[in-house]
Image (cartoon, rainbow, N blue to C red):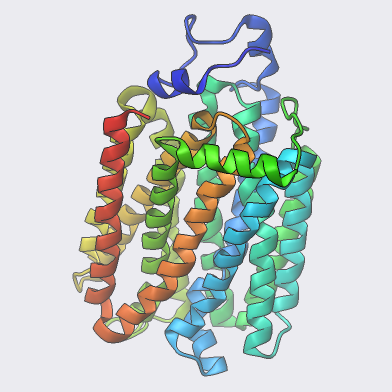
Amino acid sequence: MSRLSASSLLDQPEQPSVASAPSHHATTQYIQRGTPQFIRVTLALFSAGLATFALLYCVQPILPLLSQEFAVSPATSSLSLSVSTALLAFGLLITGPLSDAIGRKSVMVTALMLAALCTLISATMTSWHGILLMRALTGLALSGVAAVGMTYLSEEIHPGFIAFSMGLYISGNSIGGMSGRLISGVIADFFSWRAAIATIGCFALASALMFWKILPPSRHFRPTSLRPKNLLINFRLHWRDPGLPLLFAEGFLLMGAFVTLFNYIGYRLVSPPWSLNQAIVGLLSVVYLTGTWSSPKAGAMTAVFGRGRVMLFSTGVMLAGLLLTLFSSLWLILGGMMLFSAGFFAAHSVASGWIGPRAKRAKGQASSLYLFSYYLGSSLAGTAGGLFWHRFGWPGITLFISTLLIIALYIGKQLKNRAV
């Protein structure tokens, strides 16, 4: 079966054309936009992304409540998120290659169900260490969804529609992040944080069942060996590529900046002069809806302007939004959060959609390495930001995030100049 080469995908717009498209027979084997299979894949991956991010970030708006209940500092409280993203990152090194060997759908379904069950158990824990243990297991389980979703799309969707499809998948992530924060923030304010976590767990379990029922089985998956020698060869191949390591670094920086802002903005807004309650802080998660629009839009824009330009612009939007949060007006802060969120999901959509076409082999492992860097940034930067918050307040957080974004802009320029 003929396919587009990685180089042709990177150098040409992501639109089907006579010159670049596979033969008619090969093209019909891919899932194309507008078909029933495309709708099923979109709904399934959208729900998986939604559940994954809801499970992962449902603790973010209740970090102040966890600080109060367990008598821990903001930086320690943030470990309930950082430990999940850290274990997710390391789990990616296992689940990506595992999916290359045994298949995509089975890994994703099992992982999502296990993560939902661990979240339900965490709602019953009475010790801080018990909370951290369950959150760690949740992150480890979610690695099986995060590692494989992008790979499934890159294998099954027609090359001309991968960027658009990836944007829809990322928009599910943005709605999931919003839903997790919104639901947990509101329910925690009216009932308790335990009820909030349990609700998210039930929601994710239902999403896992729907995902299992409607996702079409893989048609282009070809199993590869799990032998350590093959894994090492593929690992070295990815790191020797002129573009993939730069994309891995972008994932680290962008996610680190994003999580740091949303980890500590709640601490700022529940304090004077705003003194917002927990429900209102949770409602501010509606800014994630900007990512629902910006991520598929960014995917479409790459066909016109190229990946490098769109990534640079999106990162610049993040920086502009960050600077707006320095003002004391709540409306300016909200506007800054919206810009920051829109820029992040657009940049992440471009970077993640770049991995599949760029990787010459073992695409699951390549996606895992990108997401390993992505969630490692969340874990390390998200916790480190607490030190800046404790010593310098919001100006310190702004300086820390700005540094990450300036480095991301520099790397984005290198990607654009190398036309990888």
